[in-house]
Length: 278
Image 1 (spheres, rainbow, N blue to C red):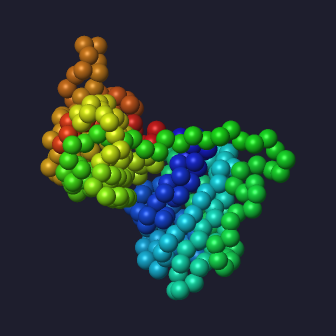
Image 2: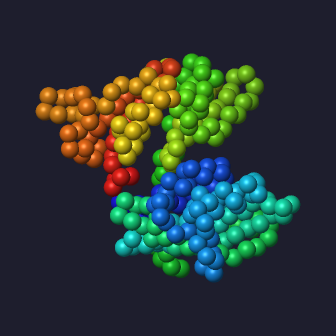
Image 3: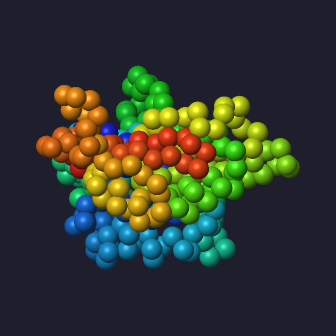
């Protein structure tokens, strides 16, 4: 994975997962032996990112954060961030930059935070987070895919399937009377989410097909889905004669699949991309 892509994925994951306190999503960004320093004058944090966040996040509430565009090259990146939260009856704002080093698979192997602390919730200054020098041409607008709206017939049944059976994070369940409800769920480690509800889609249930989830190991994904009680097909690949049972014989990236559907018949594909392409 190239450094800029890895750094952008790191920033967008933190931006979504920090306010939601989704430690698992953040921890997945780091190699098992990654060094995590929360300040350059501190020793590496015991337990890495997971250990640090498990100790710090419980005391934080009403978290707001934003991450700038990375400056990235040759396996290293710097990302500005700006965060505010409530802690011990005070409002705290930290403005900082994280310096990262990535391995060839795009996982963080070294993390160092540099930051200053202030009070209240001041907004970032004009031009903050652009990743370039003053007077530089504005960077192209970044369009990030965020959300798919699924048509479902029974919202509670869909919420139970995605949240309990699949184990996805339930980020939102909002109602406004009897005619409007929106539920948002996010797969573990994903930067994009899925929503369904009442009064948010005119499409028919069962009409969505071929939505893709990507995994490192399709056989492990199959075992996990079966263990959770999901009716899922066996892995397959495409060979000279079309769709063929079993994983790709060489486990080539992007070449092995499996399929399952939600209770409304909306169809999902799980595609093995391999660690190097995550």
